[in-house]
Length: 288
Image (cartoon, rainbow, N blue to C red; front, top):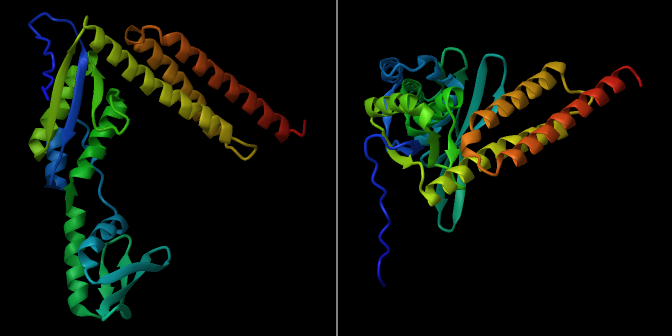
């Protein structure tokens, strides 16, 4: 079988770019929360996106290391404490046996752990503290996605995600993301997409149109769920999101050859559905 060699399009100085296809990876990444905040600041990005990890969420991670040959389940919770049951698991012949090992309490505010088994309490506390202080690759990925959500747009180029088109207008911001990932031990792959190639132009149009269509579909789905118990501020946020999407469709019109009219119509329908729903809710509220 003869291998197919992809056609590489040379990108010389002065070539007009539509944008880039990007993908990032953080395999095995482990970085302290302090170092992550410093990396964000050094890259000129908002350090507030690297929030402190609440003890209850950190303990969920700690349980992965503590669950060897035991099952850990939350059994009670009040305003300040979560109580977990530790059940040891053992196998005798062709049967598994389960024995109550201990009960452990987690203070939701301080992250302090207490239980009757001193050795297990020490191990749990050490693992919890480590999880509070450390961020992994999934955390960094969520931060990158949140930053793009605030300042740019990621358009998936494959259904499973993980590979995105970013418009050229956001190249400087993408530079900052690359700087961040380099600082924390991740990496960003960037593939420029020059304008004027039939397949490149078509693929960009499809990625942007599909991405915006998915957002419009979310508006339709949200409006359909509204009822007489929907809060006024929820309705107002829905209207704001629709207006924001309308602006995005205008902003990306140069990429939407043959697709803009369809998106405009779908968004107009979502806007109309919201208006009708608001009128219905208002009518029911006054007993019309």
